Amino acid sequence: MKHKVTTTVNGRKHEREVEPRLLLVHYLRDELGLTGTHIGCDTSQCGACTILVDGKAVKSCTMFAVQAEGKSLTTIEGMAKDGELHPIQQAFWDEHGLQCGYCTPGFIMAAAYLLDQNPNPTEDEIRKGLEGNLCRCTGYVNIVKAVQTAAKTMSTSSAKKATVTAGGN
Ligand code: FES
Ligand code: FES
Image (cartoon, rainbow, N blue to C red):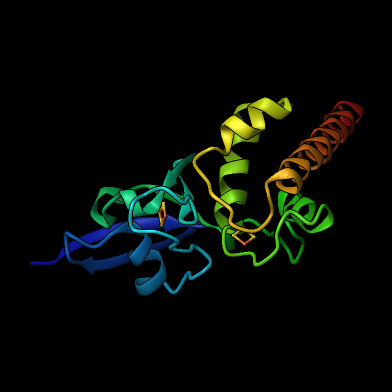
């Protein structure tokens, strides 16, 4: 028997009737066509399927779609705004934080959560924050650099915004 699931994904509401056993990652990819969320393993180890669920990084292969009822989800497709890459996406590009790119959406979503929790992480904190994500290509050095660069860009742009707001008052 199918169950109705209502989610908001990247700001858009979706209603679907799904099998209770459907994994959230398959819901995103097969029901909603959001194939930027990847599947890299069947043991919940690789992190390629990482998304944000109510702002928290979650491996979407570890949840059933029905458990996402009423939740707000962000996938890699929701990161760029108005044709501009999110600063974390831009930093991965600038720092060569990817090779084949298969792991990249998961790393970017995990990094988004990490920087939300800790806007100025040390290298150790970045490595620890991303330890649930695996990359077969890069050796991780440039991924760490990308997160450091994104942290700098994001703190500069929020400082600028604060100055503009203060100046406007
Ligand atoms: S697909 Fe590997 S952790 Fe989800
Ligand atoms: S860039 Fe290929 S797996 Fe990470």
